[in-house]
Length: 334
Image 1 (tube, rainbow, N blue to C red):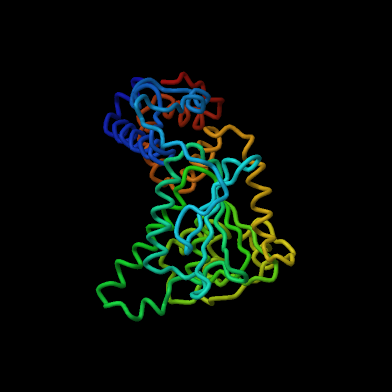
Image 2 (tube, rainbow, N blue to C red):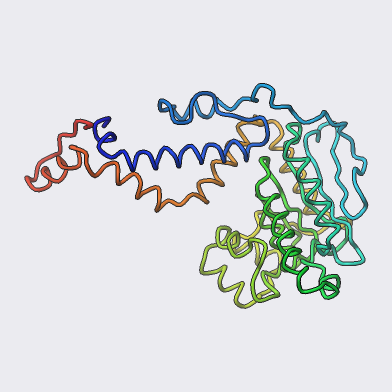
């Protein structure tokens, strides 16, 4: 096989360069201070070693130690709570714009971005729950009242900032859970789709699209969650789903009968987060990364690169000859 690799230096070089870029991206997504021991382009590393090898880099500078409490840590429109005692390691992001149905305003997007930036570098954080502090509404998308007051030149950058903060949530290295105890409309559903797991109260409605196109990742994440054909159907029709219907199509993982407090989904999210806490934090981060990367990497491009390596091998020719001679192939790994 070494001779075969040497015979295809272009393809091998491309594969190695791609592998280096992928590993660098993986380290970045695991959070600051993480690295893979050894050279990326050096000797092949067994999968078991890769799984064990993620260690804090020397001098990486871990995030400052936080006091884990249930006190509100930021402005009222976004409440960031670091839970205590048996829930230590769980952080709750609570959206609290009751007067505007939890819509994305300039200030809320800025607060979310700042909070997420701090969370992704905090190794004490194990699971993040995104919820609403406002009864009956999860998030109603962009603040259209604010948007109509913007100059045309401001709209594009504002939409880009919403997309960026939702992408930042999707790329958090720890598990994220959307607790949908209220309506999720347009961009609100896109926020939920950026989370790893979604739970909802059964009476609440989720609207896939209320505008010509989802602009914060929904056209990509919705098909991954429920399949391409059904995602197109929901987006093209702007269909409204209640909790039970959303569960039936795979959009949410759990649907709950709502309680008097109106926080059934949040309580279920807490139960799930508690299940994650005993697990190895590095293993969970790597598992999330492996699943996400497996969904994102172009399998066709990888297949093409690998084929370029196998074409000049003696084993390939032996396989063709064995088929022609109607006998079992005798592969030698060359």
